[in-house]
Image 1 (spheres, helix red, strand yellow):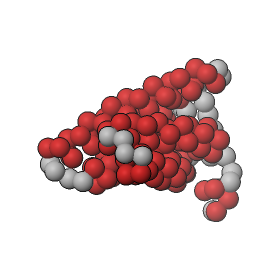
Image 2 (cartoon, rainbow, N blue to C red):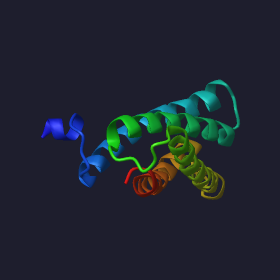
Image 3 (cartoon, rainbow, N blue to C red):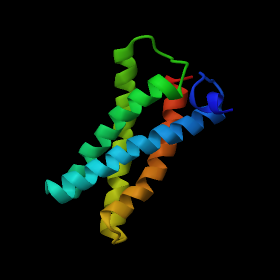
Image 4 (cartoon, one colour):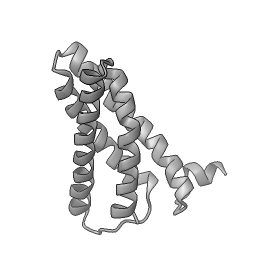
Length: 136
């Protein structure tokens, strides 16, 4: 069971979702940490920080997705695959941006709380898009 979840290749959606959640958690930790560093330590505007941090997380996510989460790939051309992956991430970035902005500025939540809420929605959208466009 452990080997199936962590080591062996798998086309089973449940295993892929499990791995995607773990990989997403690691990418999110990078994203969230970078958001804090960019905003609190470097002093960037929180939405600028959110965009930069999100892109760092997206690159980490790509690496984990192609090496561990998904086995089947729709495109043999890695540049095309990466371009589509980043395009999906950019769509997620816009969703992330507007969710954070809405919850921070309209609902008056702290920007880090807004980020947590946004991440749940963006993760679900990104998994679906990546699974059915890139890794089918």
